[in-house]
Length: 412
Image (tube, rainbow, N blue to C red; front, side, top):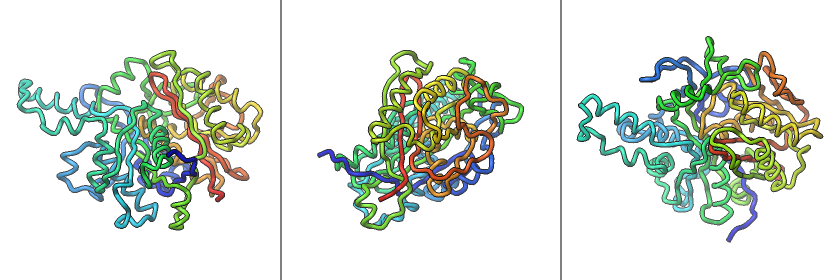
């Protein structure tokens, strides 16, 4: 039976190009520290990317790392860190009532490219194809690897929602808790995108791959000279619980999921639709029982593509035209575009604002594009405000999928 129980975030585990826990990550965001660096990948060659460096062996042995996937290792690290952060007695937790819901943009490309490269060395002899290929490439792999690592016997699956997938993972966790299908959810998103040369080649073919002499300045949403996306890897997983359960164990509460919405553009494979984005944000705000003027921070999706940034700003201008207290920022300027992990990493970077009342900036915006001008856009240095009670987190993806999640300060 579906209930309207309040759902809260009680733990955060993350891997990003500029930090492997929320404290490190937030410090980087407040101090203007980019995580973008030079990168080279076979066939495509030299480029730039958001590369993560985390201790995978903290939660996996080397054999499991070799057998599994990069996305799986990221998910395992994030899940374990989130559980630890939540303070739950994991040994006494009923693993059959734990669910794992992880958003992905794509999965399997890396493994298939690796296998084709491998058999090429043997004159394309398919006998050299790895018998691990199938379990590595199934769409549920990252979530499944988490269950294997942690002994979870409840439901697990991945949600394919392009670059809105991380937000979609959160929504799935909320819904499964309210349905009573699980009592504890691990929800978020992961990406291993930088390990496939195809994504770089495709963005380059679309004239949408960022370049800059200084990698740390390559991701520049809203800047007049922005020239595309910086591809990144990463992950963020939250522990979600019913508020009543969290209060029973006196858990630390980061935020409450107060509203969310998803919709579809139905207009183009890659070009965004400001009208549909606007509708998605409105629906999320209505579901939260709020007015636009009550949103304190908007975490934008903006990827530093010419049209994408303008379309989102157009939607925001319309929605918040009467709000003087809504501030707008962007996290991709620091970490690039982490695809399936983008939305959840971007939300995580803003969660501490509830306590410190500081909004991290959008960096690398040296010359604001006049078409991206909007009131209260936080650029290049942090902004301290009186209070932060609600954050709206936008994520939009290819083939026209849009997702908005609203979190509120815990006032219970």
